[in-house]
Length: 230
Image (tube, rainbow, N blue to C red; front, side):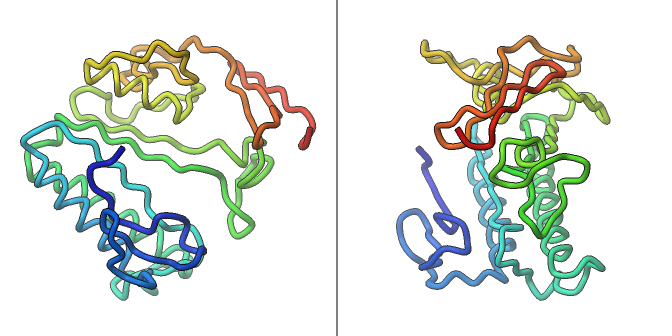
């Protein structure tokens, strides 16, 4: 469903670790040290080339999935070791994309969203939450979510309302003036939360599946979690 592609087509611990541009292998094996910088360059070039029309950029960084790597510019920069170096380079990358939007006069016309796909594996900590990556406990699935749209989303506002990445599709579709498909969707329009108009949104309970096993349901301030395996 994408017009262009640049990246490793799976996690970087799988082999052969090839770098693809569209459907062509351009590097085998992919050089992990230069990956974040090249993702950033390609993203900025895409924004500049697309500024004359609506565009959608999906930019899932390979890191901090292991094995970790950082460019020479960032290696040794963080007191938190290689993991910290990787995070600082990703932080720089996000800043470069935002700078490109600003330089091209697109900042006030672009909704930027940032999140992650799962909680930490054993190298990291989920803080006060129970569980890790691969589990349906909150430590496995609850993630920060940031949204930025100058003039449309209030600066500095936070919410603890329940939302899901499944909500991105219906939200963006409505903002673009599109029509949702007739089939039922798992996500709901979360724009009232992002715009600051509401502190919470009505939604059916969110269901937590591990493969085909239903393990939990989250509704308002309550979560039911049943057996780890069915």
